[in-house]
Length: 539
Image (cartoon, rainbow, N blue to C red; front, side, top):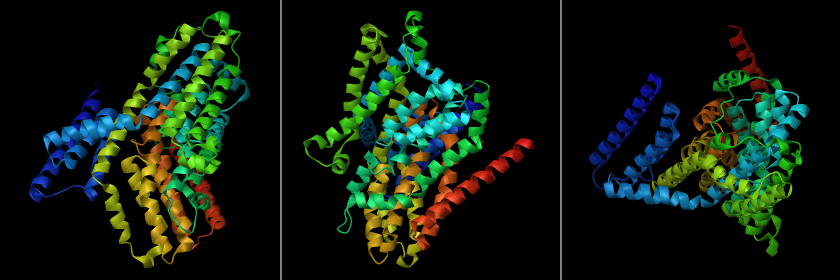
């Protein structure tokens, strides 16, 4: 361990101990009846975890310390209570809640291992090398694929990563840049697609006699500045061809061959491809498994939502469960892919079976991070942060309603960043926003709902403990903390643009005017940043 790494670890340990001692002092001084729940204190565990992760660049211990701090607070520093919360409420419940996603991850990892075994990924890379001529083209192709896979964010992250890695590697795009493009076209595109698991979730939280859930979602889309401007921002970066912040450092390294990929156990153990099979491998050997996976997962989501039992399409997506539908479809895709590759004589049955544990091993880091991150969310839930937010929002002065969309956006950002969940954030805030704007400010209702949804996506995009952020790191096979630290300046830039746009929308709730304003502001911001970056490079 380097001296700098040791120093950072020592600082992180000191910070954690100071926080725990401080909480103990507050607890003792406040008496036996004191509770950290339903107060601003409830935000502390995720803040500690996120802070430590950014300092140490070590995510597992940072998340565990956050869980420990939360468990101590929730149990009022009872040893037995703390252990019970860590084991039962955090870890065991976390594994139970995310078991479906674990299965989906393992199956997807196995599919990737299978495709790599055949050499189909290399075939796709050769095709892309001939047809995608530039770095800009590779980034835009990744962006387009991300936009096309709008059904679910988990599915988006892992599929885009698996398909586009050979393309971006060929054009020396760093893995953290790939992770950013994946992350920027996962939750944002799902949040503006009427047929997606996210649209279904939002619709389910809307309880209004005046509007249906899907109507509220669709009418809120034009004001969802963060999601829409993130897409504009990604395209702008690709076309203008520059980077800033930590991302630029990784991109410079990528030009020298340091792409920043994690070492893959699958790649290390994988034997060389049999040269007698190389001429047999075709581009379709990659395309067919991906298409089968997409189709099977969509069918799985619809099946779980009872579409085939007579439920309409929108209602089926509203009632589906991605943690069941995605593994359902992925398992079918795996079986079909194995059969297809065996028939094509690209793998033997024995080789196909070896790819399954290899896929599991490749996904272990993502599974561990997801387990700890979900555990931290569970502990934060015990501290009832949502009630504190509700009570705070209820006290907002009605006369300042025009400023409320921007305030809702900020609150949603903080809440999603701290808890790592978009769905939990808009689940808390949508009922509040509906009640606030129903009282004499109905023209701002859809702006307010959009602010809630945009803030939830923004916080989720920035948060190291967000499952979507974790999936993007897994999809690009890059260091998770590096992904978070490199995309944070980009996400914060779009967040600032969105905040200004919501201020304008609070006074001028016209979708066309506001979208035109936010687009011009985004493009102008990119041009200004590029000019500043060029001056820095010349200096």
